[in-house]
Amino acid sequence: MLFINQFLSAAGLTEDKLTNPSIACISTTRPIYMVFGDESDHPAYVIRKLNDDHDVHSQQVHNRLYQLAGNQVPEPVGVYEYAGAKYDVQRGVSGAPWFQIKSKVRTAKARTHLEKNLWNSLTDFHSAIGTDAAHKSNNLQPHDELLQAYALYLDTEHTVDDKLGKLVGLAVSELSEIPSCPSIPQHGDFCLNNLIIDTSHITVIDFEDFEITAMPLYDYFTLALSLPSCSEDPSQAIHVLNEPQIVTTAQSLGIASNTIRWHFLHHILLRLGPWSTGEKRAGYREWLKKILESFIKLQLKM
Image 1 (cartoon, rainbow, N blue to C red):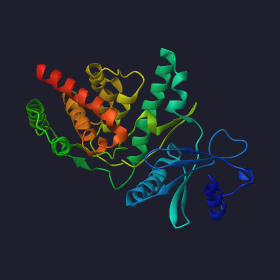
Image 2: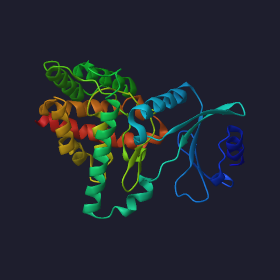
Image 3: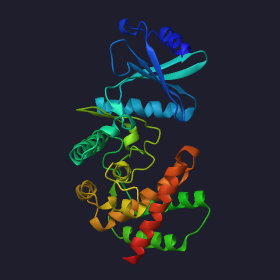
Image 4: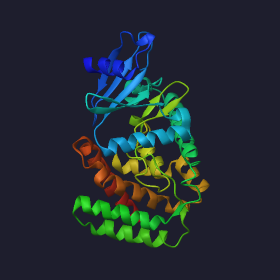
């Protein structure tokens, strides 16, 4: 980690409390370096290397979201060059990732309290980004969005399921007969793993998939499928589409209750496109496939 100390010095990011910093590294798709001071339980800085144009775009998205959402996302510090590479630096935030605190959520009361805060954080996040003039008053055709997600799914799977094709046809027919719905930029992966949870505040992180779609409810399904209350059994997990928070949000957006299921189908198909083809998402992808199978069976019965 010596190079991080050298980087901090070269970037002018050393402070009195960082005279002898400790550094931790989380290995994800790209390493995340967390710099801790002497007297803090949360990092002073979070540092990521910008490897390509996609990383640069994510950093720019983060800047824009901070202007809209304030402390709902980490504060950007800047981009710094060191040893021929560029690094994105953010302020650290108080709290902990889900994997560090899930063992503490042991009772139904604690789970209910946590989930209420998580739903509120998603609603607040969407309210904040909804103030962006670039997206106000925009609408989309949900049947077009579903067809695009289905096309990406077919390109990825290279197989044709007659039952799925029949269901998509039914969904497109129903959706094409209803009015357009609001176009709302989605975080893209608003799940427990991308939230830093503190006692009184939740911070949203990881904007690499931001605007993967503007189809309403996409983020709500992502969160619902990651909650402690969501069953690991695919045949039960599909019932998240009846989650009261999702139904209420759909109503507020003018989305008919009988079409929520088609928004859920769009969600699963888009997640089963290129998004989940990497090795690190292989297990999750298999689970999503089973959810899709259960969903198809249920809908064709109906």
